[in-house]
Image 1 (tube, helix red, strand yellow):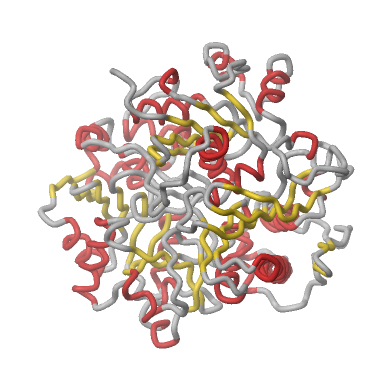
Image 2: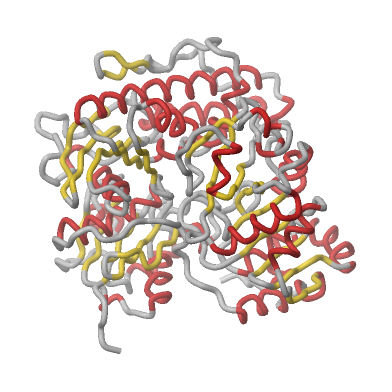
Length: 603
């Protein structure tokens, strides 16, 4: 097949959220995170799976790709791979993957078609390159970026900076394809042991992760901290960070925070004697984070006069802070791309190559996040006829999947909704979602306990017809990627209580017909039946697992949770009498449940 298109491949390599993004003539053709393929949350390591996924979906070979751009925030990819050639670091390159790398031409590549870009520059390109704005400013705030000595792009304000300082915040302006650095905040090297320096770095993102570790024993539970914050009592905890004259101050973390979660790590989190203290701490770090981000955004607005703000970096996933930025920062428009965290680095790498290195013009705007590959009806049939899945399910071809689903939802049934191409990023946006009726408060507890298996305080998000959103939620701005929290109008709070958080807010996703036809039609059908143009939406997974990618993943999750029905395209799946017999038996052997139910086998 002759080469008809120009391709650029972006890769986030080795550390958490390994991912790839393939551009076809400047448009995102495919993008995927490794966790969706390997089923390991925030998967690290080599990038073979994600690259192969994108190339196979497009039907091309690596040789058809014109440019490959990569990033790893630990070290430049070339240096990382040189180290991994002789040093055994399983978290970056597992023993099983060492067999892959020797055969992969990208590993330790010497070609001028394979380059590296630094972390915050990649984040910045992911933020503005496919935004709807011709000009504006960019805010990048995350846990930690590259060392100053590894940031080689001109104009990144590395002069006079300690070589081992790390990126923490970066602010840019852009016009068309040109990016200009306005300000960078560097984290100075810190002391530590067992490679825990990150947790003691005096940066905004690092501090939020530190609180996440303190409360949940996991640095990557920042979303849970955000959800817990409204339960806290204001000002019960001393300020954790402040900003004065543009300088960030992070007081030293002391023995007063004595890792209270450790004694209760095996106990019921909900019943812990430390819960009120955790809630107060979550309130404090969320409050302080919002205060700093607003100060930074107002400085950007006043300094540049810009009307448009683009956001990326892990802190950009904080939808509560984003809501305040949209309402209070003074910008006319605030835009956050759907994969603002490190999986989105792959998008930024690809666009850095396409725009900066190749000199192309911007021509594409992200209007949806459905960048996974398509699955055919034979894939669905295979998932339902393999292993014991064929014995546990009843399968019907629906003549109107939207009307049938709306009817069952209105009767209180919970749906797994699997449609089209999977979403890229941490949010399920209606193609890999669990859907439910928001009209009863009990639905939140049903989902947390019976389906998601997570803490009762965790809120659920609404999806709403975009044209109706302003009737139900405060604020005119749209939120297509579920990255802005809005207040629910008082007259609607009792009508859709399952999606109203304790502070009266909701993490809204607005849906337009042109961005997701099938989800829009489902919302229309539910409104026609109930008068409510809103559904509850949560990711199609259980606690601790990635969002489902394939029909087989969806069937497995459906059969091992309290989900009542599964919609696979136009196929309506329910559980039969044999499921009631087999499920308790297989539940005793969870390690082999997946293999038995769906015919999977170990490598």
